[in-house]
Length: 193
Image 1 (cartoon, one colour):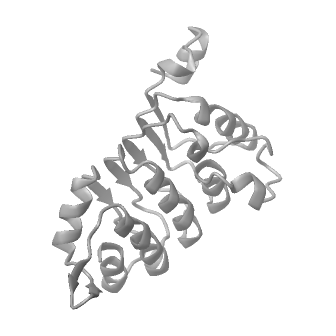
Image 2: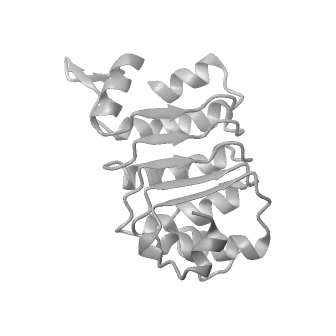
């Protein structure tokens, strides 16, 4: 359903299950509005903010529970609440493809993944700028999604990428798209192991 039509029909926030913006230039006023509205969408299952020129600062604002106390945003309303603070949210699909996200967003997104780990099934972070360091940071959070370590002689060892995939699927995550982020094979390995 288009946003204008939802507003015209008086759609309530509990009726919105999918919120998608694709290839839209979002201005300062719209980010402020999104920052106030997104946390109120308790039944939101799909969130796609693709190619909207989201920066690391905006990612922190939207996905981090502590963002408003840590950052000073001149273009985002200081009373804005984050998605992570919405305890009723049960997001299944998150698509942030084609933005300008770097390793600076990895911690905020990783913490959000942990909060949503019971329901989050599909994540797309394609065509951003995470590079190896961002992949490594995200890998730390992804490893926390499921118990993966195998104990041998009281030492924990890393699992294979195949074991990682099996463990992630046990927790519900069935797809993670991370193409075109400027990662070397080593960075991809850090994401998966």
